[in-house]
Image 1: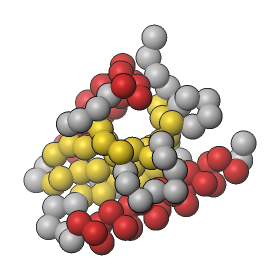
Image 2: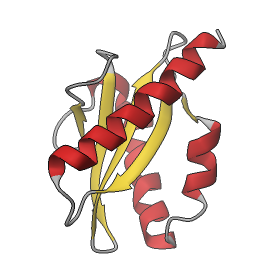
Image 3: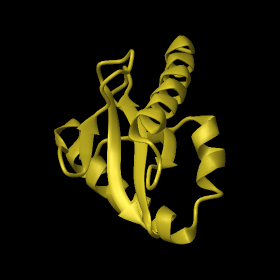
Length: 115
């Protein structure tokens, strides 16, 4: 049995502008997440420290010259919800994670408020 994976509306739109190479690598990483669920750990997944949600994680991969992070969390139905992606290559780490976590928290809060 695999774990369910979904995405918030904003992530769905953002996904469309990623290069095909990045989309393909993300899909490969999602196969791992679907198979292992919350048990998938480093180097593929790590906890996002500083989030309002203790279950906020990041999917980690390199693709197309970028160092990609995809924030996600398992919701009440035990489905992984993809929230926001970003390439942290060449960006100040504090600034990158500040922005990523802020957007991920806002999107996950909205998802949870819908019930």
